Length: 74
Image 1 (cartoon, rainbow, N blue to C red):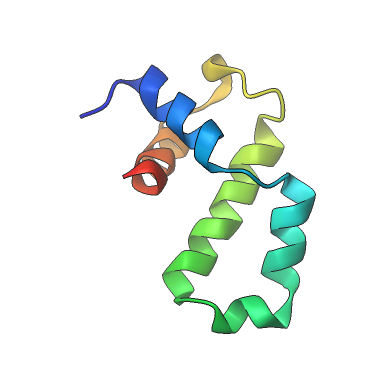
Image 2 (image 1 turned 90 degrees about the horizontal axis):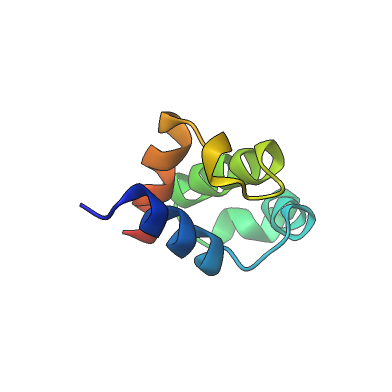
C-alpha cells in the first residue's frame, strides 16, 4: 500500500481540473453519458475533497478523503 504522502501527491498531480471546471463538467448533461454512475459519484467526491482543502494541506485530509484518494490513484 502506498504511503499517505505518496497518495496525496499522486492525487494532486492526477486531478488536473479546478473545482469550478470539474463541477461544471459534472453539471453538464453530457457528463451523464460519458461513463458510469460510479465515475460520476467519484467526481462529486473529488469536488468535495478539493473544496474542503483548497490549499492541499496534507494535514487537513481525513481518513475518508484518503480512502477515496487511494481509489482514484489506484
